[in-house]
Image (tube, rainbow, N blue to C red; front, side):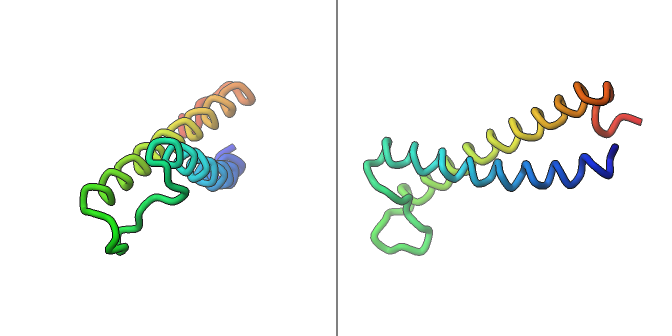
Length: 87
């Protein structure tokens, strides 16, 4: 089962990353009124603006990653009756 779970886990991680990017962009657009978050090397933004954007982005990516991993593990348990990684 591990042979099947690993590739699926990687695929869902990539899809989760893409989804997190979309979610972050929408949240940033609504919160800041800008289409794109500031880049760290853009001199037009302050330290505070750059660090807040990075913190929000990291929190969203972490949340989505955990949700995708947890959902995948539960899917494996529902399908096989075993939790991934349990021997």
